[in-house]
Image (cartoon, rainbow, N blue to C red; front, side, top):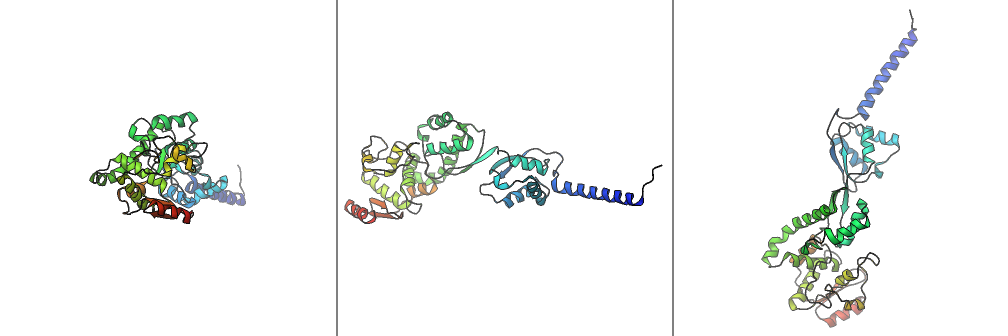
Length: 328
C-alpha cells in the first residue's frame, strides 16, 4: 500500500485547486462565448479607436471579457493599430485567439472613400489600390463598365464612403455607386422638375461647380455666375473643363491651366463651345447639386480666387481684369 505524506496531500490538493482556478479563469477570459454558432459580420469603422473595437466585440457577443482579449493581444505581441478597418467574418464559437487571428487577416469587405469632385479615372485608381485590380481590369472599369449607358459615363459615381466585398465584380461596384447616386438624386428631383431642369443638366453643371468652387460656401455664388452666363448665351469659360481635357495619369488628373489651353480642340472646352459639355467632368457631391438648383442671385459674370482661396466676382470684364491685377 502506498502511503502519502501529509505535506504531499496538502500540496496535491493546493495544486488541484490552483489548476481548477486557472482553468476557470482561462475559460472566463479566453474561451468562446458559445459552443456552436453561425458566422456573422463584424464591422470595424474607419478611424475606430482600439477601445471602441474591443467594446464592440464584447457588446456583440464575440468575446466574453474585454480584459481577456486585451491580454491575449499582449501575449501575442499584437496591436489593433495593425488591423485594417472593414468587414470580418466572426463566430461566437471562436476563442479570443481565433477572433484575434481573424482580425489580423485581410477583411472580406473593405472601406472605400470617394472624395467629392473625383473623375472616374481617379475612382478607378482607388479601386485598384484597395482591391488589387490589374491595370487591365482598371482600364475595363473606366472604358467598359462605366460606359454602357450614355448618361452614366461620368458624374453618377457618387462620392461617399462605401463598404465593399473584396470579391465584388467591377460591374457590380459601378452599379453600387450609380445606385447611391440615384438615391441622392431623388431628393432633388421634385425641385429640378419644378424648375424644368433635366437631371443630366443638373449633374453636368454641378460637376463644374464642384471643381470651380474653392469650397462649399463658394458654390452658390459660382452657380449663380455660371447660370448668368448660360441664360445670357455666353460660354461658360470654366478652367475646370480644360483641366478635364488635359488630365492624365502622367500629368495629373487636374493639371494647371495655361492660356494656350483655351485653344484646345474638344467638345469639353467651354471656351470654344457653347452650352454644357457632353458629359459631367467630375462626380459632384450634395452641396454642388444643391447650389446648382439654389444659386445665389448675383449680377456678376466673372470670378477669380486669390492666393488664399477667397473668391472675388465682378459684373464686367473690365472689373474682372482689375480683380486679376489686384488679387493675382
